[in-house]
Image 1 (cartoon, rainbow, N blue to C red):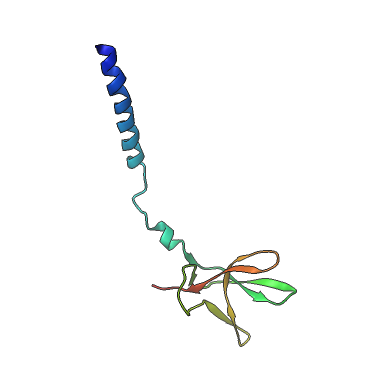
Image 2 (image 1 turned 135 degrees about the horizontal axis):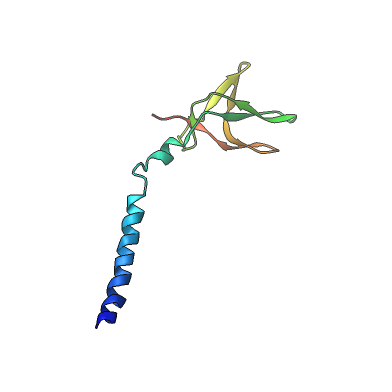
Length: 99
């Protein structure tokens, strides 16, 4: 009788303890991902010799905003900003930061 009791109760107790521990150590701030979408360093395309040039500080976001790409004025030329530079081009178009 004792062994049947431990076979049922012990695994159930271990499962409850694991669930409680996982909830106790989970961060309560789930909005961090939204704040990380803000970009302060961006890149713009600048010809064949220097495909991506860094521009900082900027206030852009990755999340799509219709008809509002993030731009910067460089020598009277308006340039669109991108998030990730690669060896051949800039990638991931940035958009104006919506507050």
